[in-house]
Image (tube, rainbow, N blue to C red; front, side, top):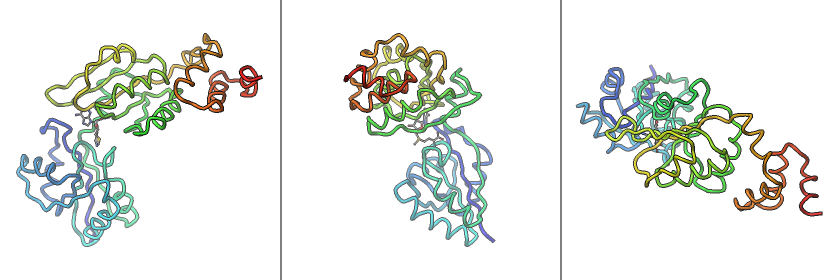
Length: 273
Ligand code: SAM
């Protein structure tokens, strides 16, 4: 008989945030597949659990998935954990899950901590519909493009962001989204847990050097606001916004036409004929 693949959520800060079922599964599994075995060992020592560990991290996910699948097919039960929170959410896990499903191996979630959900539920921003974007691209141009594509998204937006990139990201959000309510959920479940709430511009203005772990929750787009956003700008001012972002002439014309819901040839004629 085949074994089962358990996806076990672990704490995101406070070690007490682990379920009784998670402890039971960790104790009863044959192997624990861990993103960083040294990191997981600390948790296992805290829980007084001794188990053989298999390292399973992003860079070796494809190769290690096959090792795990082989063991599962031999009938071994495997608990997969990441460094913190829910596996496969901006963390390794998805590759072996897909392979297990292909092999008709049972995949079982063991629910628990997840930073995005806890940031959302404490944000005070609409929880009815939301989009989780994970980490934004490292490349600045790609990051801006991604945010630009999200500016009309009405659902609440949730991002993970590293502290040293946070201010830059918030500034681009302000340029692309305009003024919005946001919440920075910092160091969730830890001693220095903190929520920084307010309009994008005032959060940026009051920001000290960011430290610790952050989830960024951004209010969705307001249709009225988006409609009027460019209405009061002259075409020259509108052009300048995109020029300052380093965009090429052709791209600027295309964007202005889209923002103003007009034909790009007319915009081209206005500037260059
Ligand atoms: N799998 C994890 C989960 O379930 O949330 C996420 C892992 S991802 C590699 C790490 C990112 O999650 C951090 O950079 C931060 O954006 C967010 N994060 C994780 N723990 C957090 C915490 N305690 N407080 C705030 N953000 C946290």
